[in-house]
Length: 300
Image (cartoon, rainbow, N blue to C red):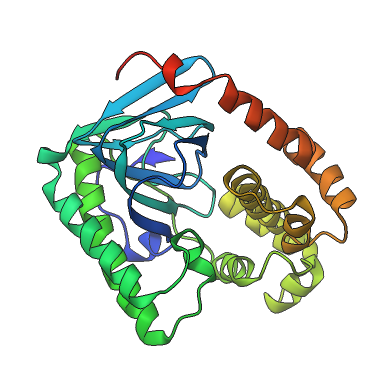
């Protein structure tokens, strides 16, 4: 991916995947827990403080800061009086590369990002008005065409403000070249298909009017991975988010991700996540206990 320093055809930018996962304002749901590097986070700490621990490295941020944590999993600890404005979103290319570099955390004084704050406040009000229910499961909410269009309008207005802040912080958007229309169609189908349904290479190839071999070669040439690998990457990200970010049963998660049994899910998790679902959760709990709030030191 090359830094984008000049203009590109609109058709290139249309390949960008921009999705809002949730928009929330208030006290954190818990003072300690996992920080997931995906999806992207944009937090305005309005009261108290937060510390994110990545292995042995700790980053602490006080009220009055917009923070954009790096794309690594870690442990987050909020002070007891913490309040925040939280936007979780995905802005990436079909290759999985983020639009803006996320190898390091960034922060900026809220006074220098007033437009981002205003657009975030409005986005949250729109989401609360249009969608009733958990803000963390926004993409699963039922919506009319009107609600979808209203949501998209305010999301893109928010993203314009976010991109300006990234520019202020010295980041430039990356870009990819023109995508083959068949690859674009295939990605749209893969994104629309529920994870609890069976992915069939033959069905996708037939819809794209290609043989499986032709389809795989075309995808690899355009985005560096086969449709099956793209599908598995969706499951991997979803599994990580639900295992570490919820208390749902492993059996329920397994079925939602399309596995016939928890044992099949466990075998898959060991291969793709490095450990069984149970072990992942146990390690997560141990990590949180190893970083109690009174042990947090240092500022960034």
